[in-house]
Length: 138
Image (cartoon, rainbow, N blue to C red; front, top):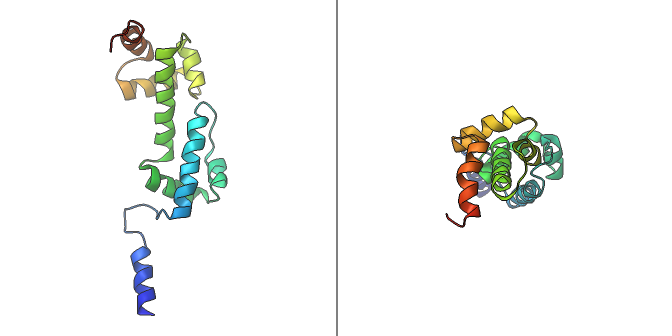
């Protein structure tokens, strides 16, 4: 009986360390990560993602953070900015079209997020790095 109590105490999460991520929960989050990667430009709703992972919203959020190392909101923002980066450098789409394709709900929000991440506007980013890629220079 003492062994069971000690084992249970050792399994409890330490304060400030996030939710425990068991094998099943980790697998669910990994499936969610794969889903997110394939649906970058689509609207993502926490309730729907939690249902897909068969978890409550709260448990999903805590487990996602524990497995991914960052909150869902930040992870999705980073995915969308990476997609925008790819589109800015590899397509002739307008900045507005890039924002829409990358899942941003409006151009000012996209511009602000992009500037915070890359310290320049999307247009400046395209001018600076798009030409180097097209000319074969890195």
